[in-house]
Length: 119
Image 1 (cartoon, rainbow, N blue to C red):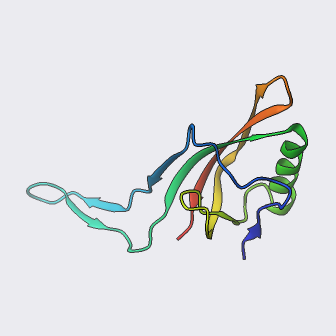
Image 2 (cartoon, rainbow, N blue to C red; image 1 turned 180 degrees about the vertical axis):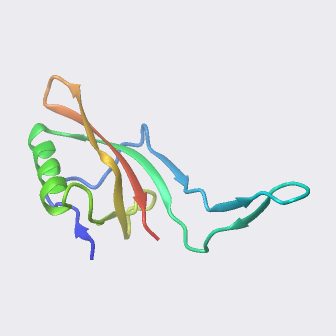
């Protein structure tokens, strides 16, 4: 079962830097003669998402505590609003840990996420 996104944090990703790519779902095999044979691996597929958020220092602490403690360092899935329509929840897992950098000296921090939207 997926863990809920923390209520204390916004669910809005910044539009600048949002990338979504369908995950490769093709298997390719070398044929004895002619071009490689290709087929779809599965009818169930996922997407890779790269996104950022602007958070305060306190929100960064909340996010990292949630990541480490509730998600067991990213081992568990979580629910978050679907980024494109923001009307329904979808299930995600972290591909890599969140990356934190300073956005401005006025308590604004940029957090970058690499996520997989689960089928």
